[in-house]
Image 1 (spheres, protein in one colour):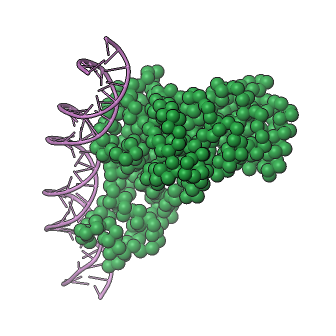
Image 2 (tube, chains in turn yellow, green, orange, purple):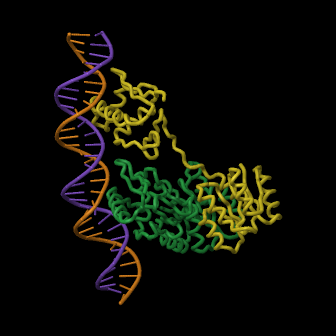
Image 3 (tube, each protein chain N blue to C red):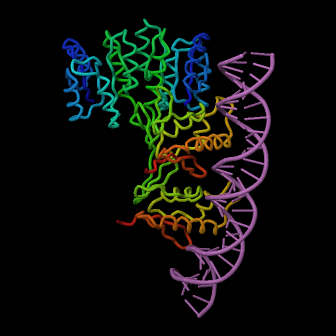
Length: 225
Length: 225
DNA sequence: GCTCAGCCGACAGGTTCCCGACAGGTCGGC
DNA sequence: GCCGACCTGTCGGGAACCTGTCGGCTGAGC
C-alpha cells in the first residue's frame, strides 16, 4: 500500500507522515500541486491524501484531472472545519471523502482503512474458452471484441458447453438441462439448437470447435490459433 | 437509484426523506434495526443512510453483517458531532462515510452523490456516453448543449443505463431498482418507460442507442458519429 | 452397401417486445 | 376545493423473434 500526501504545511506533513508510516503504509509527501502531479504521473498510488489549499493551485483540479483520465485512485481531502462549500466542490470534483482539520489520528487511520478496503469492483468469474468469453452477470458472450447475438436457449447451451471445455457433454444431459421442468425437449430439438449455434459462431475466430461424439454427446475443444 | 434510510427519529426521517426524494432518488425509510435487516434482505439498495443509535440494537452490527456477506452497498452513517469513538467504530465495521448531525442538505446530497458515484465502473463526476452527459450534481441530462426534459423515472432509468454503458443491464435489475419497496412494477412498465425514453432521446444527436437484448435486458451502446 | 445418428432447411405456434391509447394519481396555482 | 399539467402504470394489438417439429439428406460405422 502506497499513499501520497499533498500538504503545504510542514508541521502537518510530519504529523500525518508519522501516523501513516506508523500504521505500516508507505507514504510519499509533497508540498505543491506541481510536485503532486509529477508524483501521480510517475507512480501508481493506492490513495491520495489531499490538502485543497495549495500555494500553487487548487487541489480540486488535481482530483478533476485524475478523474478525467479515468484514474479511480481514492482521494481523501483534508479541509478546514468551516469550509463546507469547499468540501462539496471537492466531492463533486471526484474526491471520495474528506477529513476536517484538526483531526485525531485514530480517525485518520479509520478513514484511510475504509477507503483502501474498497473492493476492486465486483468481479464475476468470467468463463473463457479459446477466444470466446462469457460474463454470467450480463449473460453476454464475446469474441474478439464483438458481442455475440444469441437466443436465450443458445446462450444456455453454450454456457453448459463452456463449463465443460475439453470434456464430453452428454446429449442426454443437455436434454435435461435445457428442457423445461415437465416438458422435455426431444433429441432433435437439441440438434437443431446446436446447428443454429454453430452457424452463429462460424463467422467469428472463436478458436474453439464443437465436435460431435456420435452416440454420446458433444465436446467443446480449444483449437489453436 | 434506490436508498434506504434507517433512523428512529420521525422528524429526521421526514427531513432527510424530503431532501433525498427531492433530488430524484427513491427512498425507503425504516425506524428499527429489525426493519432495516428485513429491507436489506429483500431488496438491493444503492446506498444505506444509517443512524447508529437505534432502539433495538447497534447500527454498526447492521454494517458488520452486510460486510460479512460481502455486500458492498455503500453505507453513510449519521452520528452526533461529538461521538468520535462511535465514528471510528462504524468505519472499522465497514461503513464508508459519516455525516455529523446537524448537517445541511447540500452537504448530505454531495456525500450521497460521492458514494453513489463510486459504485460500478466510473467515478467520474459527470457521466458521459456518446454525446449524452449527466451531471449528478444537478440531476440534469444534456446533449449537444440542450438540456433534456425527462420525468424522474426516466432519469433514474437513463442514469442506470449510463452507469453501465456497453454492458447489458438486466431487465430484472431495472425492475428492482426502479420499483418501490413492495409494489414491484410489471415488466411491461419497464418497457413503456423505455419506449418513452427512446422517443425523448430520438430528436437529439445522442450518438448512443438503447439496444434490446431479448430475454435479458437492455444495453446502452455508443454509436459513432 | 446398409443402417441409423446427426445435420439442417422450412414452417408454425408461442413468447417477448414495442408503443398508441387510456386512466388513476400527484402537485401546484387559483 | 377545483382545474389543468404532468407523471406513471395497465391494456391490447401488431411486429419481431424464438424454438420445437417435420422430413429429406449425408456420412460414420459396421
